[in-house]
Image (tube, rainbow, N blue to C red; front, side, top):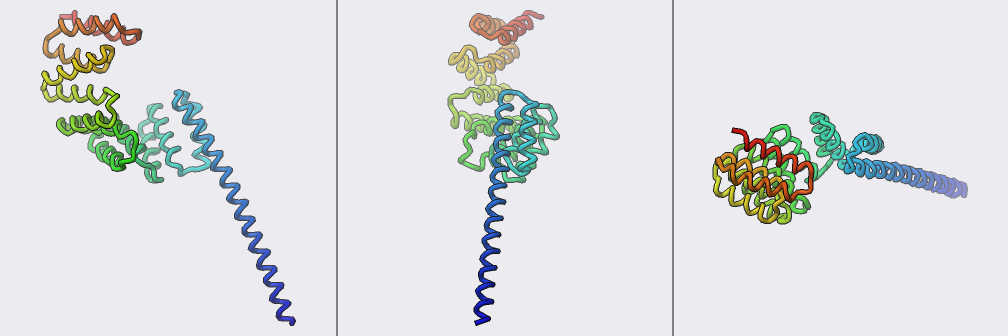
Length: 259
């Protein structure tokens, strides 16, 4: 009888301890959830500030988020981009590497590859950009293909670069940047006729495509066809509503007048 009483007391005590432990775990989980929610709020505010080019505010909010949740990949990626905007490429690289170690995916590989391009580290950039393209679910593959094309151009692999630019066009036919870069690649190969045909096609589609016009004017100048270059620049000046674009085109006209 006495043993039964002791057994019951032990069971009651054990149950109480288990309940206390469950309550403690529940409270801890609630506290962790609140912290993570606060970290996410700081991240979202920081990201919005980053898009609005409010760099000090972006740093403030993103660093607060990092302090609460130090290994969140998207926060580290955003800080990598923020440091790049500030001009500190070394700091930017360190954050991208931390993000990748924390499990970041294709977007960070693409961003890091773009950073390496800026530093003219083309072979390293190629590796990162190919990793970005490993995931077929990545929604901005066209950007990674454009960056990959730039890396291949830097390595002198012009044909492969053109293939990458065409892949970008296949993934996003609405953008024209990949076709402009393809035309630029033909110029680098001295395939001037092909380049000119592509520039002219782009400008027929949109006569205010400044990127295409920039490349075309350089090509026409190279081919000593200044009359045609002047014609396109004058037409651009008459149509554009951008003061900056008009100023650029006017400067290009002045250069063509020089002997």
